[in-house]
Length: 112
Length: 114
Image 1: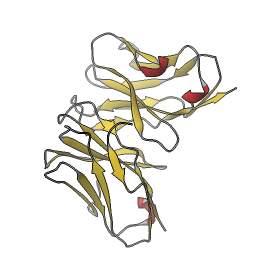
Image 2: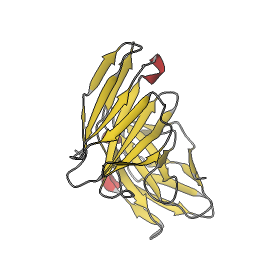
Image 3: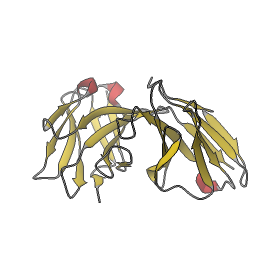
């Protein structure tokens, strides 16, 4: 158990809908990262937040957004969902903005 | 730009035999490198990391990896496979020399047979 929690574990929704994935980092970690794992693209970095501010951006679609709240938990919002957004979404956290990352168990999103 | 290539998408071994998972990296400088493991329906766990100290790195569960600059390789090995080692393994390099953007290899699925 890494100490990073993600909810929900599974999410099934329809195309065009909007969902929110939640991540709570390990106690004391200031940085949160989001990754997407899909069969065709593999594991890809989406975005990083550090102490409430966006730190780095990867291959994140404009339909996706994230934020980190004052209590350091983070939410990833996915809107106008498409079939291709079906994937496992991981959150990771680290103490600093450049430290070892600890991964949560993931949220499996299925778009029908 | 940094990148990693995992040379085998699937590796199958018998329990008790050695494991070798191959990874080559591309970088303009000596990078940090990691191996992560993902068990079925679980998150990713760090197995070991190389950060330019010793070239032979020991990790958890009996795994180790050797950084070879001349071969640009960072292969993962274990002397004797256990059934519990069946999982997907990822070779990982940070994008910019810091640790914030991780670039994952395509993964190697390890099967262990009795």
